[in-house]
Length: 335
Image 1 (cartoon, rainbow, N blue to C red):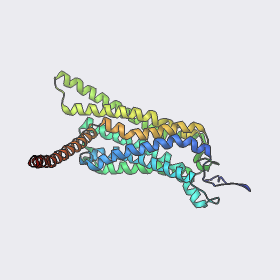
Image 2 (cartoon, rainbow, N blue to C red):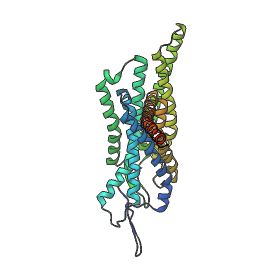
Image 3 (cartoon, helix red, strand yellow):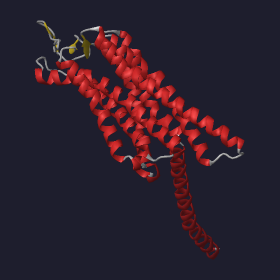
Image 4 (cartoon, one colour):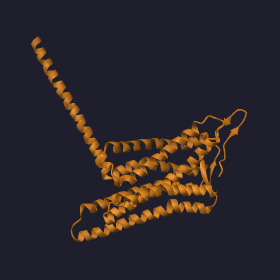
């Protein structure tokens, strides 16, 4: 493990070890603007969760876990941006420098891997609901807890083993961010397989199995001239997840693949990172648009707001009405 400290000192200037150069700051400004927008979209989404109890359901726990990882990615970006642009000390504490570097380099990769497995768990639970008509969140509560723990711990354990075995190490590039460097191609292939190929293939397989089941069931019901509301709901679930997963995969996958085969100094990483933050900003909007439960919650909020406004107008009119009549009567008396 090694951290290459960036400390350039001359008679006139002193460049702090954690400070980005101006080029690095300018390159990350588009991501900064996208992340600010993402904060707004996520704030609106979580505001809805606070005031609408109808969307606080056990079956939506994977969606919320996924969106929490989005929030953690946003926090990581803002904290690292502040640290790298607001550090004025020439002598940086080595412990603090190491902590910032390891957190910055590892957290992005860890959270992105966690997200893909959270979506896999969501997909598997929906498959069980569609094929077996089983509420796994109640019937298999312990298994769900185990799945949560496995998803959060496995990427972390893998990363720790790679760093402490010497297969990967953290590097601080002068005027740039900290990054993880892998010592050989086999580690990179393993990471791509573990973080990308395996969960993507499993997700595609589960989606295909769900579509096949719905198609066969639909053909059987059509022959019987009957399609139940439950089957229509299951079909909508598969369509919603397919649309969301396609958009997510297009925006998320470039960052994960590029992360394994480039360094922090490469400008190639900027566009995939920006796409990743765009995906984070869009996540609440896509989930809210595709899931009818969120649409119904927003409809309820709008109706409640409109009804309160109408009640206020009616109260104001009642107050204005008697005052107007009294003023008119007083004017007639004076005449």
